[in-house]
Length: 221
Image (cartoon, rainbow, N blue to C red):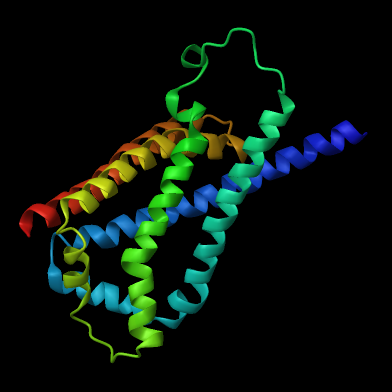
């Protein structure tokens, strides 16, 4: 009975982890779409960013939900990693990880920690200045400032390189995480292989677009 309860709790944790991951994947798709506009049209990017920055629904509902989702996803990741380690306290005498699982699946915690550190840098670069601009200093709204603020962050080749490396690791994280999330929520049907291919494509295309955006702005400066 106790073992069954523990199993059910573990399954619920994995499902919760998967749902939070799917939620964050949706955010990534929206985020890269908005940022990609910056290499097409400065004016359209400014208009879209200004709308996002001053829309009450986005600022006071969706943004807090996103923050909670990020925190929850990483906490659940650490809990599940610790839980899996505790379930196998004695290491296998011989274990060839590369023969049994991909690098991305064996190192989700590593790529996750790097992404967490990257999020700290990203908040420092964009979120904190935005909070300071609107709520601490209380500057008047300026719908033309967003493009310049974005481009300025990619002047420095070191910072640009850090962003690019982080996006590569994001790709590795998504490569396993997307398919794992679908499996955890029970998508074992005739469309599962097709959905997995979409997930692998997403894991390549989205990080590649983020890298492209960073490099275009860096070399155009």
